[in-house]
Structures are given as C-alpha cells and as structure tokens.
Amino acid sequence: MKKSLKLLDIKRVSKSAAHCAFTDLIENPFDKSRKTLMCCYRQATNHVSADGVLVVSTIDKASFQIRHRVIIRESNADLRDPKFSHDGSRLMLTSYAKTYLDNGKMVTKMMTYFTTTGLSWSGANRHGKSGWWLWNHTWHNSDAYGFAYNRPSNTLSLYKGDPTRTMQLHKAEAFSLDKHKKGYPNESTILFNSNGDAFAFLRRDADTFSAQFGTSKPPYTKWSWHDLGIYIGGPAAVALGESLYIVAGRHVDWDSRQFTTKIWLFDSVTKTLTELNTLPSNGDTSYPGLVIENDTLYMSYYSCHIDNQARVYMACFSGVKALTSKTA
Image (cartoon, rainbow, N blue to C red; front, side, top):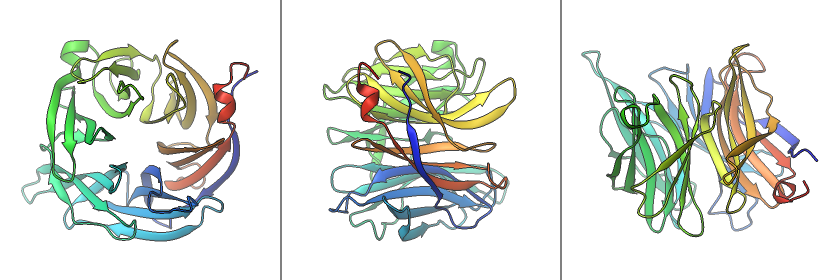
C-alpha cells in the first residue's frame, strides 16, 4: 500500500500584506491544555526588501484561528527567516538581520529574542559574524547546535552555544565546496536521536542542486554526507523513530521550472525519500514548520498559488501512524 498523508484542513493565517513568508511552527510550550501552536513568519513588501518584520502568532489547533499576535521589528534592519527553538524553559526566536549602511554596504547579524510566557518577548541579543547565516538550530543537552553558512566561501560550519548569549564555532567547514566538491551549501535543519546521534538535512544551490543528508556522533566534529539526488529548499524535518523522518520543503521541477512545497518520508537506513503529499502551492513557496501530535501532522508554509501574493498557510494531515507500519 502506497504511503501518504491525507490533507484534512488548510487555512490562510497571515493578514493582508504584500509578502508574508519564511515560516516556522512549534507546539506552544506555555499552553498546558496543548490546544495551541505558535507560528512565526516574516512580513514585508517583497521577498528581498529592507523592511522585514517578524510576526509571531498563537494559533488554535482545531480552528486555526489566531489567539494572539506579536510583531517584532528593529529600526533600520530587515529581519529574515525567523526560527523557533526551546531549551526547556525559554522559547527563542532567531532571525537574520540585514542592515543597509549609508555608504551602500550591507552588514548582517543574528538576532535572538526569548519569551517565558509566549505573550511578550525580550530585546534582541546580537551575535555572529557578518555574512554568516545561522539559519536554524536545535537544543541538545543544554546546548544549541546549528549550521551557519557563508555564500562567498561556499562553506557551512557548525556552531554551538546559547543564542541568547553567544554561539561558538564548533566545527569549521563541516561541508564546503573545497572539501566536498559540491557548491553553495546553505539552509539546514539538525535533529538528535535518543543516543545523541545528529542528523541533518542540507539545501544546496549550485551544480546539481541536490540536497544532502548528514550524520554525526558526539562530539559532532566529524560529519558524513549522503547526496539525496533531489532539491529540497528551506528543509524542515521531524523524527518518527530512530530511522524515519518526515521532511518538507521546496521542490523544483527543473523541466517545467515549477516550484511547489512537498512532504516526503525519509528512511535513514536505505537513504530513500518517498513522496507523501504536495501542498497547494506555486511560485514563491516553501519554508515549512512541522509539528506531530499522535496521528496528526500540523504544517505551516507559504505560497503564491492563490493570487500571486505570498501568503502563510496552516495545514493539517492525518495518517502519521501508518507511516511507521511495515505494511503501510
């Protein structure tokens, strides 16, 4: 029987704006009833513009209605690609801030905010070197781990620490054009299993454009990479067990140049991707967030398929449990 996920509901959750995109999603850690999710995204006038602000919404799981909304902005900075992380007590939001100077040059910093209520946020902690984008990070054993990439050097390096204080270089050139002969590694997501092993999904935008699957054991200074053979933009992943993952991101049909947001099942033993669903999507799209609850997958993403305007959507699917069945 072919494995799949059944789309149960989908609703737009972004307010009217020229461009709403680059989402993330997390179970609301401050809601003891477990009835809400938290979704973040960038709101701006365009995909690349100098006026990006961050929108953080608390969303009802059953109806996808917005319960609470906060806007985070910085003067003279474009805030991009917000990502959640949770260290057990604090919910953090990290974004890449671009500032355009009077002389025409651009400088960048990572910005991390935190909350202990989900209702109000701290001021920004600025960290990182200009030009290095710590696109995502995951907490493991009291430390956050994340890959930062630098486009001019075609390099991806692993950082470790606390983004509300500082992130230290942990492994330089974990993936690079010089070492691996494959260009422009960039967006990534890291997961850890119960043994502390690390797994990563990595986007690339050069030569074959093929995504990579990385594995490492503590202390995460040696990484092995497997070429997945397809393009995955803005990768997000959640584990279903020790060797199965739901992966989502932008897919490109290179013949038709059509962009869509897809969901796959990945088996880390056989290194195979099985397509599960294609979201209603087209054009500028992807950057999903994923949350699993029992048999349900909740997903945030953005797309231009309705009116050629980038909008943020919430979707939910059933069929998660059957994905781990041997007979599914």
